Image 1: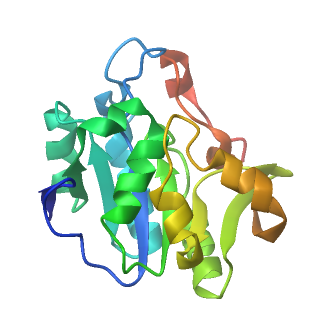
Image 2: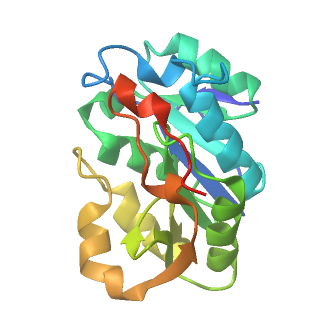
Length: 207
């Protein structure tokens, strides 16, 4: 269990695939701190997402939060997630992803997941991670032809990811280099379901 200030403490050491949980958003459309809101089974949303990511990518998961997200930090630290803090992440997910990549410079790649997507099956995440380990530079799950999350990046994208800013995340990178992406076709509709509003808590799988 690691808690650190990303601006001053040593990097989070890992030379394998690192799961990056993007969890610094403020949840304005939800009307409150949605990431600690319980799902139908009582598990906080971000905890459910973190568990699947940690199990799917092999145990190494990092998140970079706003300094005031102490409650969420405590919940995720109990799950074994490495928790970092950086005031700049309030500027957008690009800053959050860049901070996580800078904190893990020796990683072989990153599996980037969103904390408000708690319904992805860990087996789907594992398949994306394995695709990276097999040599893909970009990989993502596709459900019925539509790209979902998490998105995998190999270490060749370290510099590009480290310099991200704003709220677009890695979208421009994916648009420019999407032809290099390996598709992981799946029957897991959870890869497309993010919970922006309370109504999204009622998700039910089709299968």
